[in-house]
Image (cartoon, rainbow, N blue to C red):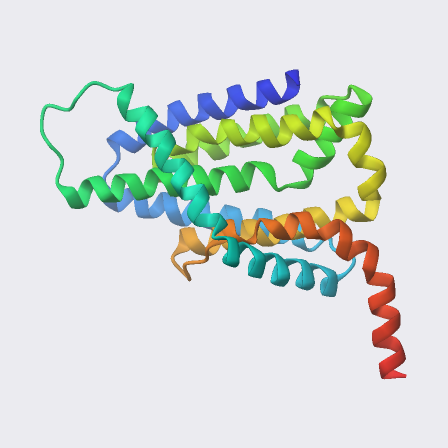
Length: 252
């Protein structure tokens, strides 16, 4: 767990640095930061997604996972959790001298929740998270998680400069998800297998691409609703040989 705790510390440190930029930059400059973060997210997501060995498997996992998430309203639940954390954050601050306009306050709440959501997804869906957590838990090898920690710290600076302090609360997600993977590594690795890890990373890449589209304003995608795709990947990977055989039999 020590590697995950270090990861949380780097994200928190990056977020605190990002808060300084967020408070000082003009609105026009925030657009530049959103574009920069969006392009970087696209690059990260595409590099992850291209590692797939089964486009059909990724398509099935993302499509059915998205349907499940839409039915369950997962993104809305995550945003509500972000709102809960924002309430904690506000109680920890002193009352402001000048009351905020309702519209400005609503925008702040939205950015807080979106920062929490997008940072949680970005920091937890990559191959480095999954493989690194398993290596740390099963082998005591912290190298990959430590490298990820440095990268997450820099991304936290950029995301916090764009969204605000909500990004810092993603350390709760990192602690629960990445920490949980580390503790359960000995059980998870044999079940998922090497190919399962590859496809899990590819599906995670698709989710990061969605974040990039949101940051660039290309299309508003409810990324949180696609999180169940990560849970479906192992099953889809296991079923793919049978699906391929069925498709081949129809084609033949």
